[in-house]
Image 1 (tube, rainbow, N blue to C red):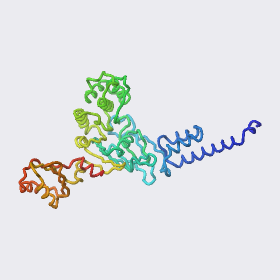
Image 2: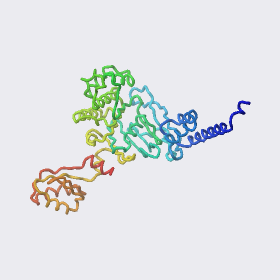
Image 3: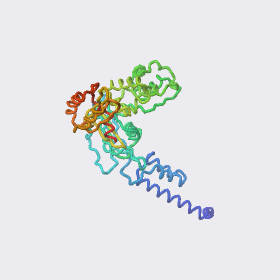
Image 4: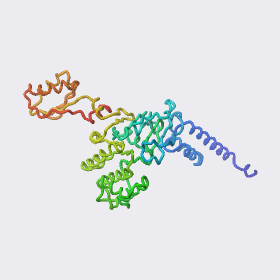
Length: 404
């Protein structure tokens, strides 16, 4: 007791302030959403790390401003549906709705022909919303292309679908067992001392140990790396790393394959091979891919989602997206097109006309039928020689109209 009495009053005061600060910070933790780490981890940091360091860490990088929107995100297990094949593992579904503005999903509410659905899915980093109320629907067996400008939220969306990040609020339903999901990141990296076949064999052992070892050689051949199977991957180019990542993702024959920019590091020939491989998966494996190469999406995807500033601007078949855009044509005539250009500009159905080069015009029209009937006639009337007259509406035009 005498020893306690000898402790300076200032020390007791500091200890009291520390205790009060820790308690106040824990109360704040209970009232706000968190990021970076689970709520339990932040509580341990606040209590165990010397005050005020733990509290400062939580307040600066862990605390999400604004009132807490709901309970912690958690996963619950439900039995796999009979049509999922092996029936061995349960389906893991994230079913907690964090935002009280929305009703919780009822049992059996998932769309039966969709393998992935989200409802009001949102992800926030501090004050920045990476995703805002995204309602994604990926049909079973489809190749779904997620496109958008840099920073639109594509990678965040794929990371949440893969289980690598947790959303701030919303509902996510993945109708496939976790071990039946394959993921290939944008820039895959592997231990440099491993050979290509060892990398693929490790992925097979971890995800589908029941498959024979011969599966390793099959997928390496599919991605064009059969000749490099026994080479150490430390000397691989970025394109070879991308192929190897795709092989590791395919070796378990997943029901759902998530690809982030699968052809970004490949040369034209390699891109063509990878697109052909993805196209062959249609109907048997559901593929969700993100890319900035719009021509790739138009070649292999059945369904497209356009995301911009975290908002899903469009979702549906590519044909529907193209139909929503203005109809445009490319007109190429021999010789000077000045008189023809002025004649076309006077037509009531021409909404925009651009001369791309001498004799090459891009014409946006409001009436496609009238344009296709009248343009060749006007070219002939002006005495010009028609070299080419083709539609110019493509996925890039539709994308720019939605995101501009």
